[in-house]
Amino acid sequence: MINIFEVNETNKMIDQENLDVRTITMGISLLDCIDANLDRTNENIYEKITRKAQRLVAVGEEISREYGIPIVNKRISVTPIALVGSSCCHNSSDFVTIARTLERAASCVGVNFLGGYSALVSKGMTQAEEMMIRSIPEALASTEHVCSSVNVGSTRTGIDMDAVRLLGEIILETAKATRHQDSLGCAKLVVFCNAPDDNPFMAGAFHGVTESDTVINVGVSGPGVVKTTIEQVRGQDFQTLCETIKKTAFKVTRVGQLVAEEASRRLKVPFGIVDLSLAPTPAIGDSVAEILEEIGLERAGAPGTTAALALLNDSVKKGGVMASASVGGLSGAFIPVSEDQGMIDAVSAGALSLEKLEAMTCVCSVGLDMIAIPGDTPASTISGIIADEAAIGMINAKTTAVRVIPVIGKGVGDSVEFGGLLGHAPIIPVNRFSCEAFVARGGRIPAPIHSFKN
Image (cartoon, rainbow, N blue to C red; front, side, top):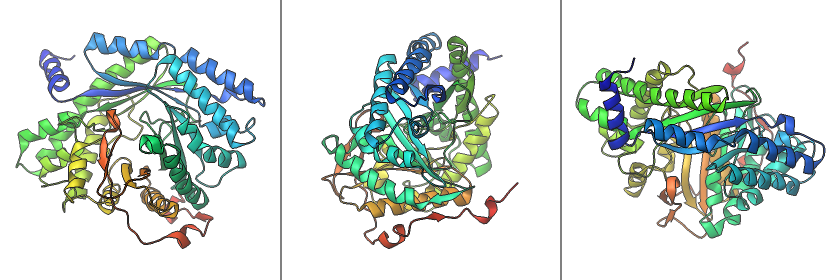
């Protein structure tokens, strides 16, 4: 039973420490929407999404009102569109029509984002998958709510370097296609290694083919809560610090479990997972970087940052895993630069570089996230950044990702304003030496030796 002390404690977390449920995400399988005729496929997609998700937003708002828990986003993820469109799309323009259908469906049901304009090409690309990837710039430039992701590698298969090379070009094309919005399209595109099937967070959410027809996944967030709690053990040893983070993560995850079960019951959709990631926002006090600084760093990026982040990530997972019937997704600490005021301040102060952020991704939940880079960065350099991050994920058997934004017309010293949860960011310098010959080799980097487990 939850006692009155825990009720008051949770209320304090919500009122004063920015605790929220970041998203309720409904996963919807579109496999039964596939048809050889493109028009019928689009009709089937629109009908199924609007039927299955028609009450998603209303139910989220009901739960928020009744329990007093802020639920920031209501979202949808769908089966990777490269699979759905493979039998009816004969060129990239055909795939764009599906993106626009997804946009119409998202607008109809009122969700914040819809993810799944995606392709899974960790071992190689089919002709349809390549066409879909080449359609991404136009698809993201002509839609508002649609998010895209591509999985280019895994520990079991290695890294598809042909896809990596292509994605460097696609990211740059997407930046140019949305240059009137400070290249905002790239904020809706993420490149993965070891992408999970049940991630509720955007832009990387898609409904994996191993999932049931529909499912409810919930993402919670509580950097402000963790920071406030560990202020009470300032100067104490690491064991005390870790135990404090674990207990806090447990409490935060219980809120997510409650919301997930209620949403599942009211929507009559199976409960999938709670993702207990610490997902920051630009709000003051809602920062992973500030947690690292409370642990003892002058600035995020100082020596010791990677160790502090590893401690935080592990403690969050240990605490949260006991509080939910099923923990999944990405679960841990996110380090998106533009969405975390502490990270922005660290970059501006010169404490945090692209290279240090890459090192931090070895121990956090995702990867290089929401990083604004100069608009004249070569496509091959972007591909090299993706390859480095994918290698970290492949070798360490963890999810890694790249969401970089080459802001056309801006360079180091400039800043960019995305607005809302996407925040703002200074342009980070990128290593000026070329990796073009490396990227041009093509083919596939083989899976590591420790992948051969059976």
